[in-house]
Amino acid sequence: MAAKVKTAFLLAGGCAGCEMSVVDLSEVLVDVLESIEIVFWAPTVADVKYCDLEEMEDNSIDVAFVDGMIRNTENEHTVKVLRAKSKVLVAFGACATLGGIGALGDLHTKEELFKQAYQDSFSTDNPDGVMPSPEYLLDGKYELTIPALLDNCATVDQIVDVEYYVGGCPPHPKFVGQILTSLLAGELPPPGSWITSGKAVCDSCSRNPVRNGQERLPVGEIKRTIDGTPDPDTCLLQQGYMCFGPVTQGDCEGSCLNVNMPCRGCGGPLPGIKDFGARCVSTIASSMADDAAVDQFIDKYNDMAKMFYRYAHTAGSLNRKVAALKDK
Image (cartoon, rainbow, N blue to C red; front, side, top):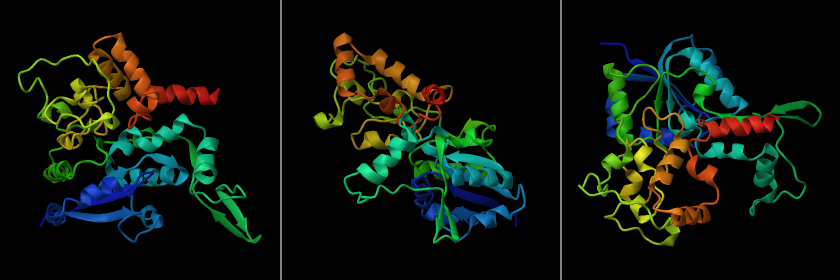
């Protein structure tokens, strides 16, 4: 019997939704477990400690998956340790590959973030204004520590080398099953690649006018989902709902579109796109019918950075420019 593939999962600064997409494989996961050995899955599933990972031999793990962005010193330390222990490292999901929604915090200062979280939120009861501190001396003799928030969020590949990338928030369970099958069969693409079907969300959308032999019409009226219920048979973008389906990987098979919601780009950029947010700007701008439509768009979407870089801020050029301004 061939040796099992030693596999690890690490949650960095994420919500564990990506790991739930693995669990959602159900019977498929049970079948895969016959060929893999999960040697580390923390902090969400297995009762293991980071010291257990540190004690493993270097390169003893065949393939490791990291989900979540690098947001604090603990994330940074553990992903570096996992990199040393792993032959192949996969950045798994939108946060690990692009930064994810949490990375939009980089558009604010740490002071603003802490104030909102620990003082200004409607459910917070903190009359003394106590803020978290990385180090604290309790009763004059107990030294307590917690991870410190980094100055800026980072994607996994901004901290360590990464062999493969998987998009999605979270990755679709069906596609995760295909990844694991390809892994066990030794049919992965060249290192540095996104593991993807290579097709756009629009390619799987039944209302795509091009697929239906129709002309794609310019957008004349801009709408938000709060403005009404979209027609389920007509292209969302042509109806005026901002949809990033033309430039987003469609490994989800159009999950959001299938429930009448526009794509927001969690699948990540199609191969060859270097700055996802910038390409979204270009795609949406070229879809506008006239200046009146542009004015409507600006009026309805007044925070362009958080609109176009909702998932991809950390991996985009805008983030680097904002970071440079912070340093001045």
